[in-house]
Length: 485
Image (cartoon, rainbow, N blue to C red; front, side, top):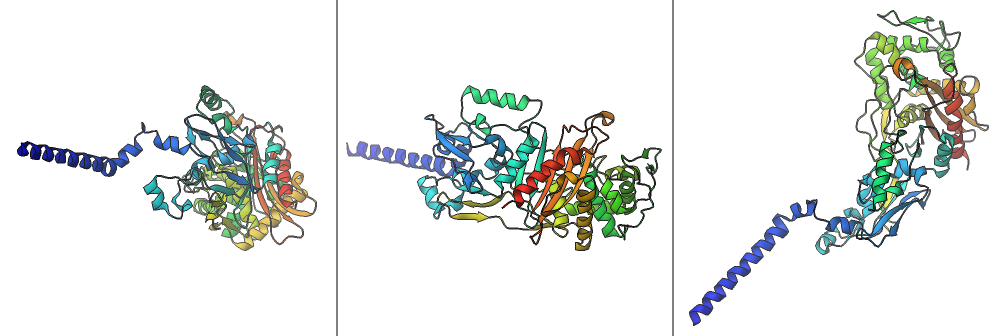
């Protein structure tokens, strides 16, 4: 009998060992595969089992959470959702996250190890920290001014502080309410389909994800390259340019919308936007010089994040002389986001230095302790300080006596550059209206804001300078909002 008891005890011991080995295999060897299995809903249930941290603008949250009573318990809410959608993006139980909701998801969801003083303890107990907060650099008054200025039109506005790179406004219209994508009911799926199929693309962030031909606003880049290269030594001397200008190696003749461009000085050509002068200057600078000049402002930069991804602005470097001439006036394959063109204006205002643009000031724990802060960095030196001084003078002339008079602000020095960009088959589409600018209060030491505005469906006729007519008033409203105490 004792022998059978020993056998039974040994068999039970083997079973216990097998159970322990299997438990070890599951918890240590296969834990990651189980964790990452799409069928495992534990993480998703836990993710939405507590309120999400908030995104703050001007010290106030523009996001929130509400208890739905469902399995995925807390749903995301948004205050002034369409106004801030190009910044916040959405957080959806069905469709995931994007923009700040995506880039700062670990902080907002409470999974960032930096939120806890004892992160290993959280791993051991499977507990979760309360969601942290993301403090943005936005100026609420500037954001509202940009949104109101664009109104029902398709377009975008980007504004930043030239000396720091802090993004003060980031608006894209038409917009949408990201709260429509919160939850799990059928209305969310219907909203997703409607928003993605809409012809006016309300979910497209035109400020950072859409590139446009920058038109005459790119002449700031060409002027900087010409001055730095010594192609132009005196902004008031004739440029030996013809009107019309025959594109090199081509029978195509480039003309102007204004008179007086033949042999015009750089000052006159910049103030009244003479295509022929800048096309010739681009050819004189050469492909290598124009490539370096554009790169200095951030063109062809593919790694820029603010912290979410920014589509690269491009200056085509594989061009012949005729294509280079067109590229130098912001046409052919030259493409830019509104944020990129705000960086161009900001470089002029900041003595030629391009500061790295950023949208997040800092992240904090739920009780307000700083987790991380965004440092200020120089991205590029776009031009010499002396060239920047000359360009500030030229841009000021545009506002005081040229095509940018609608951007003038009493009590402030404003520099600007208007532009129209042709597009469509044989340039048949309504030109995009551009305006880029910077502003400095008369009692301030340095410019406080640089702005870029693009309006896709500008109302001006082709013969008008629609950038000065349609986009400049929007830029003025944004600059006034920043300058007003």
